[in-house]
Image (cartoon, rainbow, N blue to C red; front, side):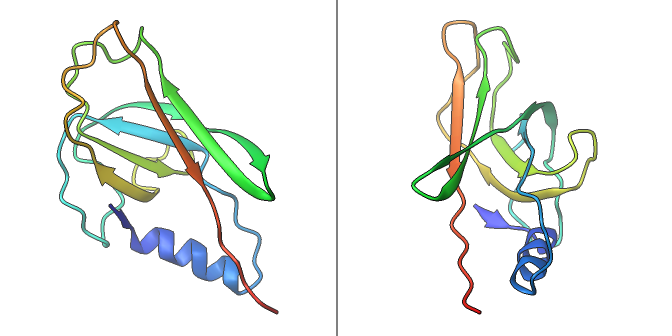
Length: 121
């Protein structure tokens, strides 16, 4: 798992007081991209899903579900959180997955995240 250079730039902007939106999509891929901070692309992205955001205990929580009807027959091996649902290469953070197996209609895949960035002024 890693944060890309693009993601670090976003975090740096936030620390400087700029308004930075949280990731708004999750991209699932069938590759096994080795993390490299200089790249913000998944090896083989196959589907992008909007992230649903809510607040819990003062922190933003994001979630996304790959439904039982989506990406069936695919070997899901990686995912990335990013911005701009149709903009390739804007992944802020991504990671390889292990042991999901081939996705079929017998299960869905749910991912959730909690953002906790703090800065003192």
